[in-house]
Figure 1 (spheres, rainbow, N blue to C red):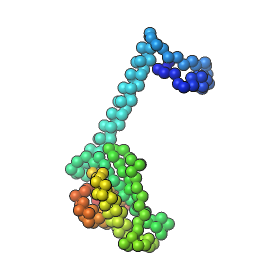
Figure 2 (cartoon, helix red, strand yellow):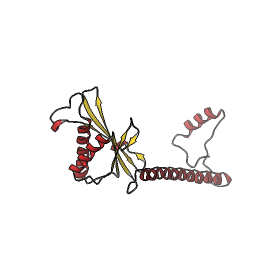
Figure 3 (spheres, helix red, strand yellow):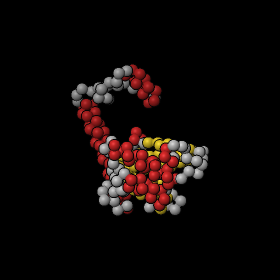
Figure 4 (cartoon, rainbow, N blue to C red):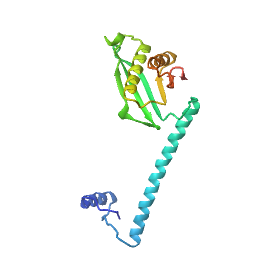
Length: 193
């Protein structure tokens, strides 16, 4: 029993019959006990869906609240921007930025940056300065955010230790945005800066 017949019920009936090992016929009950059972199933499915969505929302809120408490943040970090610097084959430095909103990754807002290097005139040389690259990328990103009037992050996460975090704060200070909260994640030491 289904609430509405699909566009091609014969195809679906054949497919379901093969899967079930017996003949399956799709019916749309209009009244009686079968209609009541179908209505009950629809209500139960809706409640289960809402409950799952609410549980996921609660879990995401709990995770953000735990992060807020652990980092002593002034408010829940609803938007988090994360930055990482990489050198491709030792010759080209690039950066990536990921975005998390309300506990969910937002792939459509991810960004990649080609690090321009000294004054934007040339590509950085082999062994380029990771700190300068971080400073450049953070400054470029938040100069653009300021021009667009947002969206502003509640937390900025920098992949790196005190040096990378300091470079990010230099960039933020240059834009009068030193009030934004940033942390560094030093993977080797498993340290939050």
